[in-house]
Length: 409
Image (cartoon, rainbow, N blue to C red; front, top):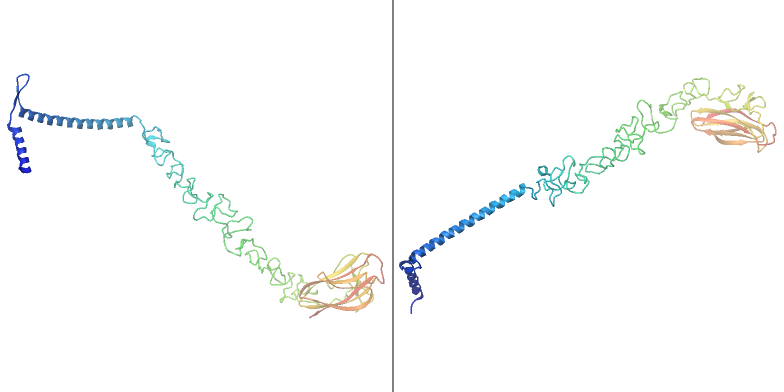
């Protein structure tokens, strides 16, 4: 029994020896003999040459094909077949400006028409393009850079109403209108000078300066105490109180009749000169009496004291007549006087009033009687009035007043 390895080795060697050493002569049709070994070598060589030729041919063919393909592609491109940038609008392209295609022009590098919102800034047409539809960021949905007055509230703006009106709630600086911004907010501010100075013509509250607002307007007012009182240091018109201005400055002046007459009720240094009114001048000249036509006068008929008393003028039924005087009282005082009536009882009356407020009234046939009424410091008007009803006259149809005195309280 033979070993498989040995048998295999012998067989292989034998085959090689036979293929190399053996020469078989074979006659062909033409009488030639052919060496099989040589034929084999020639066939082998021929096969190798054939193979080399085939490989070379294939390689050359592939190269020629690739070259022809590239040439054809270049030719196709050059002759205008579909390509973005060739200047021809092809299917799938919105535009094609050839070399003019650019991301900042009307036709982008992708052959798409430039539009607001594409994220590309079209020079000369768009100011910006952030590719979103948000209006209150750094670029509006209209591709416009944010600015005060565009109607869109941007960072740093309190408001933006899209107009150039500084008199409404939003100024041209896109800030909400406030007192002190220098713009007059119509309907809300009288003025606005942009400062907090209280002594100019516009206060810090944006109100026009006026007498009585509590602020002294330089060059216009001497004072301003924010009240309407005329008996203090600052009187009507915002002027400082002085003797002779017609207003009695409480605690400083006893009176002020706005004149320099020394022998009337108030002297030129604003000292009271009230001693009383007894009508002994024979007229109504001692005190500054005012009487309406028909006028009151004096009479010697039954005066209370001295030779004269004041008496009403003759009047008809349904008529009235008065006399009044305005006096400056240096302090609280009582007004005292005597009165007598000779009239129709309960119908024809003598009335006494202080500053328009009736204090009392009398009618009938009455003898002289004294009365007294208090007044405060300052200017007061004393009025005596006689009025008649529509019918009947009785007794003397007259009323009388005499010996008026002022006594401090």
